[in-house]
Image (cartoon, rainbow, N blue to C red; front, side):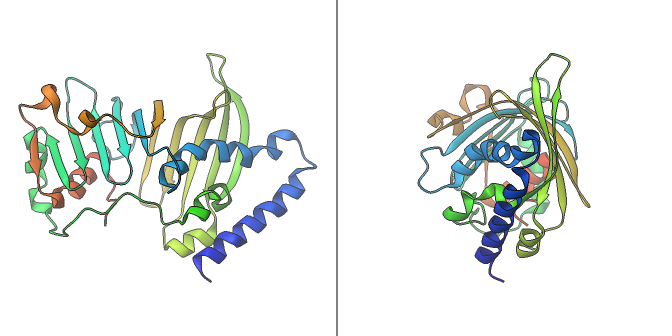
Length: 254
């Protein structure tokens, strides 16, 4: 079955589910609407006609094979080819920055640690989703929500907690391993507060301290600036993937 046909099949299944949920309590009825509002700004990053092309976020990794556990980390992403990953702990500074095919790291030792991993694969690919525009707007239909409940934290904030996974048809089409995610969402603005992902090979969790979406980020975002002038090293593009894997525990370009 073609991938697009699988998308359509998932959407038809979702519509059928909505017909059933109409007769059950509102907490269950609204769970895909909540998911759609949570995913909307992230999907917009990859939608060709969207004015939103950048996100600037601060996260705190709490679990997983990542170099910045329990430290605040800045993630600045601008489609199609800009990324800045930066530890905000002054005692353990590290930066990986990509702007097109131009890559720099801080400190110099970060590049030296992965020199043996040079792959000589040529250009770094653009950041993208394996979906067409018409499929991106249907992102909620690609997931199965396994659990959905309301919750209040100790500070009195109202939250939703969703357990979800990709629909089996999509997992098969992408030839991806199965995984599940538990996502905690603020009810007042649909922003992700915490996410935990588990698979057979990788488990990680992080808290999202803040995230802002815009058309583009300032040009200086992709430069070392005064704080990193001493010790910033421009490296060949083929070091981008191994440095990213070293910092995040994920090989996104394998």
